[in-house]
Image (cartoon, rainbow, N blue to C red; front, top):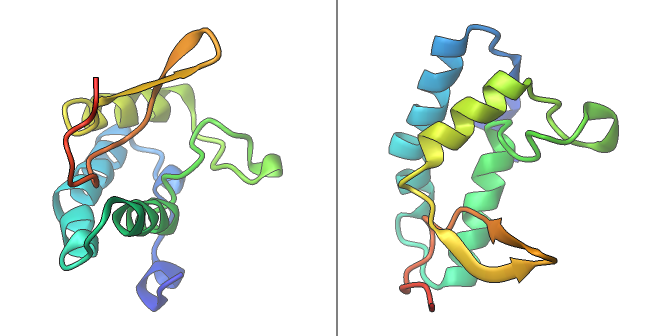
Length: 113
């Protein structure tokens, strides 16, 4: 975790929905491009993206805090999904019987179909 992340309020501690939405937008508009600048390769970019997601308090939104997640409210989860739509593409891999969704905004190569 970076020094700035240590003093940053986790996004899920923002109770106002509009402020939470702005924090998520800021993450995608400002943080992600800055974190990925100069990082090459999908694996390295994926690791940098996930670290930034964790530092912003946006990783594991749907997991309870007692299991290491953020314990986000359903409204916060919905806001994150809305704001990440269009920035993330559907994974081509299956997860059991359901298609998996994961953010691929950090990938440099086009997804395979």
